[in-house]
Amino acid sequence: MLRSLYSGISGLRSHQTMLDVTGNNIANVNTAGFKSSTVQFQDTLSQVTRSGSAAQAGAGGTNPAQVGLGVQVAGISTNFAQGSAQATGRSSDMMISGDGFFVTSKGGQQLYARAGSFDFDSAGRLVSPDGALLQGWSAVNGQVNAGAGLGNIAISKQMVAPAAATTTTTLGGNLPDDAAVGTALTRDVKVFDASGKESNMSLTFTRTGAGWDVAGADGKGGVGAGALTFTNGALATGGAMTVGGIAVDLTAVTGYAALSTVSVTGKNGNAAGTLESFSMGADGTLTGTFSNGENAVIGRVALANFTNSGGLEKAGSSSYRATASSGAATIGTAGENGLGSLVGGYVEMSNVDLSQEFTNLIVAQRGFQSNARIITTSDEVLQELTQLKR
Image (cartoon, rainbow, N blue to C red; front, top):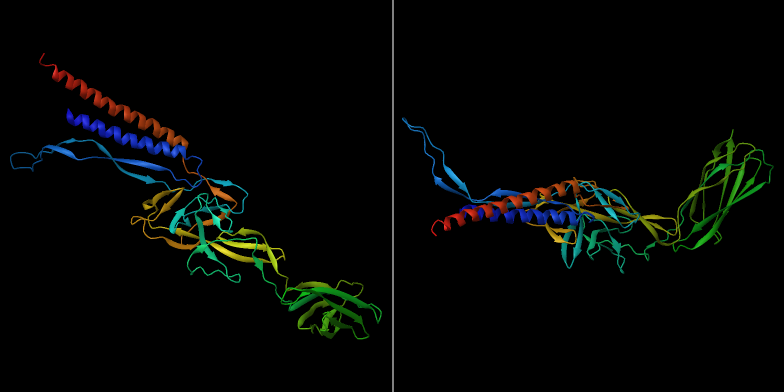
């Protein structure tokens, strides 16, 4: 009878744990990146009342007789299945589609999370709602070294895209073959020096008896000249010239009649610019758009993976820490080595299945009630025993 009492108590404790875990799952149904947990039960030691025996020549063998001593919680496992995606429209929000964890740092401790709801602090660093710093690699001159150590991802409005000098200019279109000798066409090109200072380069096309002469001036004393001739509209001679150190490519210019469409089709160089916005690629690369129209890589978000994700220990604030059971983190780039891809402007919601959780509540409640009935029944039997002598 005492054994049944203690078995019932162990059942109450175990089902209370199941209720606690299920209640926590339901409480976090709207927590971004939350992963639900499941309780597994196992029986405890059994008392052997009779040992088994081997078969003999004149008698058969017997099985052992055992009385179980209750139930206990074998483990609480975490379900890392993908949660649903919720669009936020915020460029700083991120979602991992597939396996992997964001790497964060807080108080010198490296943590891991699936929740990708990040924002900026006063230093321009991407941080989680509890202040953990998102980790990755910062770009140097537009290049990311994924083999370097991890650091804080910082995106500041004070970021500057450096100026670049104009070194090449390309023109295309048509020069009219039927234009009168002496006809002049001028095309202006905005160019930049190494400091980003803007100036105007002028290209003048003058019709000659043989074709077109080209004269260039960059406004700083630099000049250049060239000549173009055409055969049946196609460029025959000329096509390249230099004006004050800027190479001018005219090979795409044609010379058919009645069309005057010559224009600048391309050039390099730009003034310095400040960061206006940024976007994230599927591999976690952050690309900034600057006020000068240039796009440049400014960093890349790192992801981590584990041999046994179920061995991670919950550290609060929707974060995990590595343990001996999970193994060491493998750091890498999204989309490589089994890591999922990243999606900007979305967050991963909880993977809690409410229908399953409410069913688990019923199962846990009935299990608790059944074990309570074991205790009351054992108590009634003990009461009958004590009343044998009156």
